[in-house]
Length: 455
Image 1 (cartoon, helix red, strand yellow):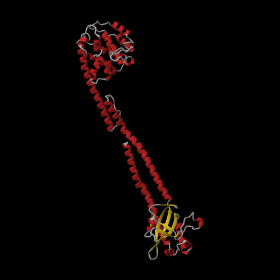
Image 2: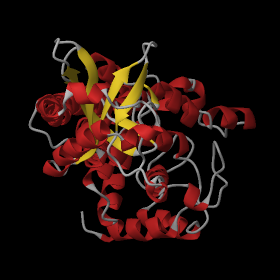
Image 3: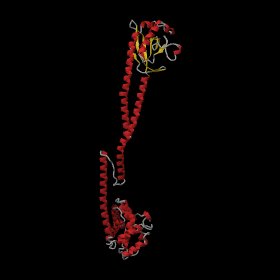
Image 4: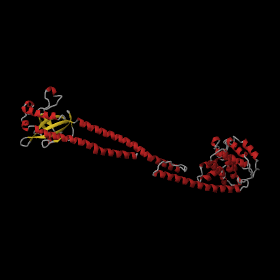
């Protein structure tokens, strides 16, 4: 919006400047040229007017019949005939009131039948020159109106010159009116075109402003969105900006920064993963029966995931989750973990807390949300009878179901303090028995293919 407004203001300034320097100059030049021509014509025309004869015209209606009136009217008509652009030509004299003048000779037809068609004035008729300062000034020197006159007879531009007697005194003025309708129409047309060009310019400036501002703001919006996404911990987000300038460089720098942060986080998580893995191994080392359990579950998980054609990133995540799935047992007392007798209901309740404890341990270091979910839910069942949340069906993700079956199989085929290890065949029968209840049939099928492979 700011770019658009700046363009509009700039355009308005240029248009205004253009209007004054070009259009107005052109109009004023044309207008002044016409004024000069009228002033020159008036000055030349007074030569044909006899000041002595003019002073003998009776200033009344009957004055039109006097010889002096007819003589001067004839000469004025000759001037008009020689200059077709002249609409009216006339003479006036002063009265005892400053702004009021009297007509002496107005040679327009004066018959009653033509009065309405051809306006005219009789000798002695009063004319109020209050709105025509140049007319009053004409008693001193030739001049012309500085603006167009609009009255009931039309649009006119007038020139004037003083009529001097033999004593060198101005006794009257000669007035020449030319029709200025064409000039006025030209002025209107130029003004209309100026306004039209102005609106076209404003429209173009809006379009250009939007295009230019969008070119600037779209990359900035992408950078802003990238900043927001990174702020929400999405370090994999990349800002796609096709710009070879500073904004493009800024986007590249931003992407490198996000990539470096992601790499740093990955290294930190890998470090934490290895530390936590060591804790799990320390935990398992205390019990000879469970030693290597997490490593075996991780290996089974990897093979199942490969058999199900999961992406490599997903397989890596599942392997890590399998390594850490029992981390919560760090919060369970050894007497309960290593008890050889049957656990009490209270002790089972404590054992079933280890997925939540594991989630809390890992959550404190902002481990991947998927990994946290798997650690929390690795004892959920396909039929909804698992813990801690009792979710079922498709709410138990494939990731969780893969680790769940791998965990169950290794637990069955490993010796415990309270029982002997099952054979592979017995464990498979147990999996078949619980297929569709505890375990997802799709995952069971994939695991059986893994177990069928040699080695």
